[in-house]
Image (cartoon, rainbow over all chains, first blue to last red):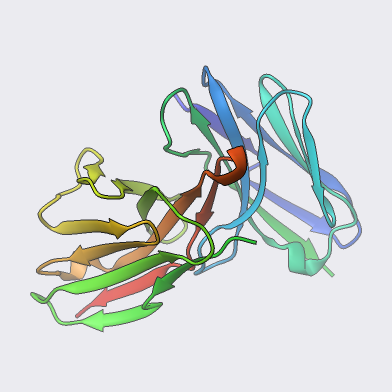
Amino acid sequence: EDQVTQSPEALRLQEGESSSLNCSYTVSGLRGLFWYRQDPGKGPEFLFTLYSAGEEKEKERLKATLTKKESFLHITAPKPEDSATYLCAVTQGGSEKLVFGKGTKLTVNP
Amino acid sequence: GAVVSQHPSRVICKSGTSVKIECRSLDFQATTMFWYRQFPKQSLMLMATSNEGSKATYEQGVEKDKFLINHASLTLSTLTVTSAHPEDSSFYICSARDGGQGGNTIYFGEGSWLTVV
């Protein structure tokens, strides 16, 4: 079964319409939860790392939060340039490998 | 912020030849680097984990003799696709772990498009 599940798979928003993306995980011994943004034909761009429940980080219109079971990526007043696929990944236990979710494709219409 | 650079960004090679892709961490030392492959509209598939000064650890199903990985320094890892065939055409992406200052952030390169003709 999937260890990292992202929802929704796709999300269409109007410019300025705030929303949240979800990333739920079932791994034990979480070392870190990562959010990336990936544009078509490019490598993932690092956004945030969260390490413990209750932690929050912000960057421009994005805010990431973490609980013991899930993380949310909140997008406030999105712009068309925020359109991308947002990837969530975790590292666990003694492993350095990232376990990815399948991503949420976000489209922001002007 | 930290930057991971890949080169070349695009390469076309003839079937049967070998091609090398470089991955460099530009402003941090990366004891661990990772190589991924990504097919269109699919998620990243981990190929191997590369540790500086030691042999790479390959994921199940990845041919280590076909995808040669070298991590000779703390800032450079290379992936060589040997005897390339059209089915090796793909988007290859590297990442590097920045463990400095007690953190554990993994940065990705821009990716390299390989087309085998």
